[in-house]
Amino acid sequence: MAVLQSIRNLFSPAESEDEMIVPAPRTGYHFKPLSIKDIDRLLRLNLRCFKQGENYTRHTFNYLLTQPQSLGFAAETPSGDMAGFVLLMNNPDGAAHITTVGVAPEHRRRGVARRLIGELEDVLRKKDVSTVVLEVRVSNTAAQDLYAHAGYSVVKRMVRYYHNGEDGFLMMKSLA
Image (cartoon, rainbow, N blue to C red; front, top):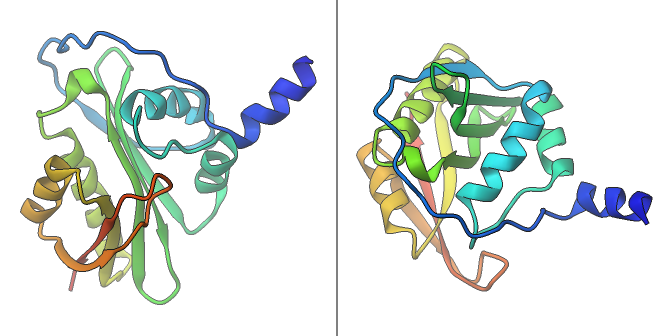
């Protein structure tokens, strides 16, 4: 039975429990590249960030953390807690695709996601990447506002894009 559960865990997101969110004390954050060593912490935070959304599996994170065209950053507190993350795939055509951005509920509304995206964009400019794209749920107006303030524009509405049938917006930014 344990073997079967281990196999399921590779391909299915774990179930998350409801939690009471208490804002974290004000703190500074430092940003570091993500690696495969971060996978367990990343999985735990991903479940907390996307309770109603599309959670990535261990298999997906393993892929994103081990591919040479992938890039990711974590925001950490001085005590080493992961407060946020961002991952992307860099395409050979000079465009990059942000696949996921997540911030721990207790660290939201502090500029963590904005700074994570900025870290990525700085690296992408040095690699001569000209365009960044991402998808966002139509209902996620907070994320849309974040991306719009970071210079992203909606270029397309994708009907029933998400697993639950919700529409999504494709957003794009030129780094040139």
